[in-house]
Image (cartoon, rainbow, N blue to C red; front, side, top):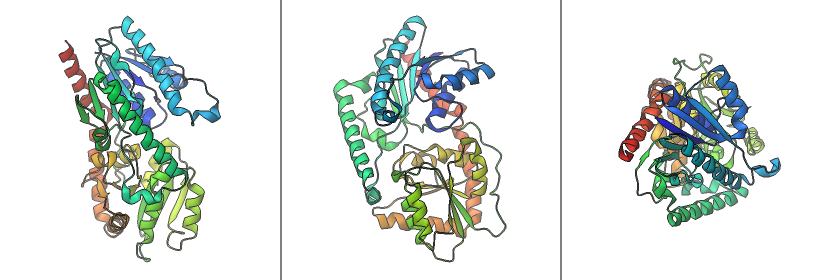
Length: 405
């Protein structure tokens, strides 16, 4: 099958959206499809270097230039930059479809509902989009943790989502999508979709290594791991509040991986707390390839994000044999079941704190259960290997091609 993938984020050297944008087309080509990728020009050196070392004869990459804004303005104008890139990519896709027998277009990145392209307008070529997220919002009991600039950001985000939702209604953009994959229930329920769609997490994993138990001293207690940017919506303060409710004599350690605007304030908070000072360790930013060594030190991954499409770190931890604690929402709700970890929720802040505190206490008191869930998590992660995800997409591709014929 001749497939064109739209992958704004596409790279071989990192995780998250870059990994999604590269692994889906790459494995699609390895399965025997003739694959084209349209991606941004800044991915060129990475992809060319990889393909020189690992040639894939049935995979071709087209690079589309990004709008040139001053570096200091790029983050501020990212949404505008992306929309302009999508227009350029659409023209490139239309030209390619006129020259080559493209049978299907699949936009896989970006994974945001605000950034669906117009590729469905290209005649006689089915258009698949997703999995997309972005419809999730911070639960009401947790909104007290959002302060200052964070409130402005969340307000603007809700406004832009609302405008986008109205726009897709008026323009009928979703009607041009032959199939939509949604990364979580919140996004599916937010958009006015009437066509064919399915829930499917956007994240995948390259491999599930042999299970290794945590590497620690014999009498060392439970070690929790939090990994990700230190941003206001990642829920670090919520977790620290729950940890301060634990009894003083419990034995645990919390490793915090990542950097960001909240780093200094979080460090100051922990150093000022008698219960947290010697228990919370900030490791800073860790290279993607070194994370496996960090997982070896941990018993459990804590994913406290208050708003997240899914979070690649959840699946990475599961693959390493580490169970996950997360909010009963978003992509975590699809990935983490009773076998692979624990989910918390509640109708009030105190209920959610109590649930999380009880889960933390259980992990500290019941290491055998933690170890068992870790091994089950690794077994479950095998369902999200990239070739397994391609089976889901391929079944839709074949269905659409059959209907079109």
